Length: 290
Image 1: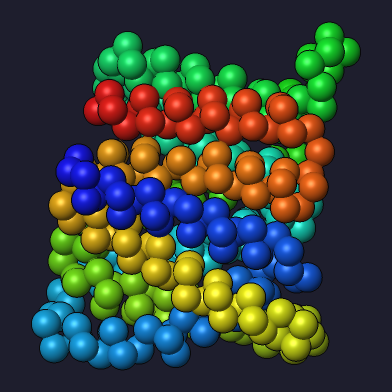
Image 2 (image 1 turned 120 degrees about the vertical axis):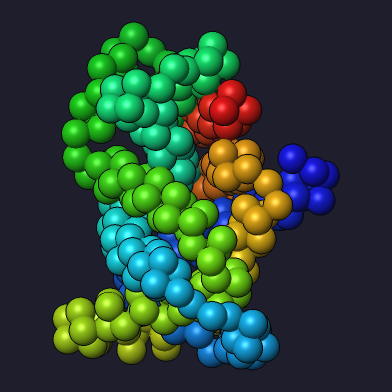
């Protein structure tokens, strides 16, 4: 990976953790995320319009856009649900770190791929990281608590979120090969916002008004950052291997742990930071082994 591509991915990672920090601070998380996407459609329309004459979307491009839009609806729902139930320094590392763990394991069992030694060490570090961030302490009495925590609550929602990340990352890698990234992401966000609109307007109408009234400044920031960070990633995918991009992006795991502990005062700082570092290191190892 070139130095420029790596810098782009690292900037994206920092701001991605940043908009998740703002999401965690919101009242009704999934509503906050949806409003951010609506704001993004307004903000990024000039960019979309300037690239539109170059775009000729074939059937494959449309298939990727609709599939990614559906997966993003699930992603936003699971992410909002996880933040409703758990801390930023738990949810973010678990959701971002579990995705790269799922892909190589599935590849070994279902399509008989062989893992390199570095990749196996990466998987081991991710498993250890997931275990450590769930520890309330380093005492012997806390040994079994991470296993129980994975069975439900915020951890389960975060793991489901991680599975959707795997799905849309693979779909989008194909999609940006057929559609210019600014057009691809704009149309995808538009469709995913429309898909979520009936639920928001029928079930969350009061929460939508309340969220905008209380947090409109943060919604504007998230509307810009959530799509800006992903646009950076899509551009990086065009000039580098997707496994490298996805792996290095997960440095955001460490950023999120720091944000949650320092700015939100979340508990169990030592365990969260150690687990986040293990997760990030494991993901980078898996990316480097491919």
